[in-house]
Length: 122
Image 1 (cartoon, one colour):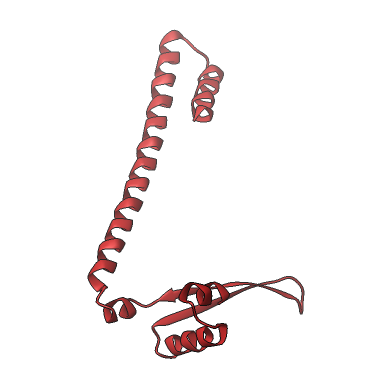
Image 2: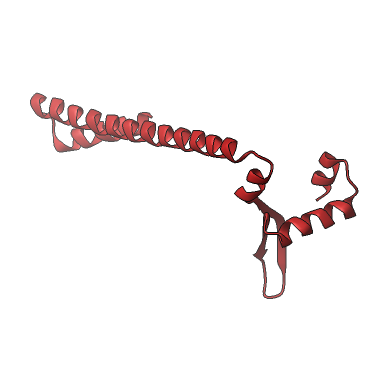
């Protein structure tokens, strides 16, 4: 709350009231976090606050929110595709190494060592 109050140039109490109003109007959702350490002892962490898409629409930013979400989803798909391609490349290297050793008359133990070396190299 202190951070929000400073950024908005408001007093702490006024910020708390504003946040309470946003929560009561369901434009802001607060998820408190805590960890149970003992039977009666908890450790509290900063709560996660999520803004509703209705708030963005109220300020005329609904289209911008959709654009940013789509952009984020595209970045995530790109990362996943890159990871998948990396995994496929490793498998192809293992297969190629295995075929090469088999043609050279390598033992299964040598094949496994070679595959292990390829997996550990990256």
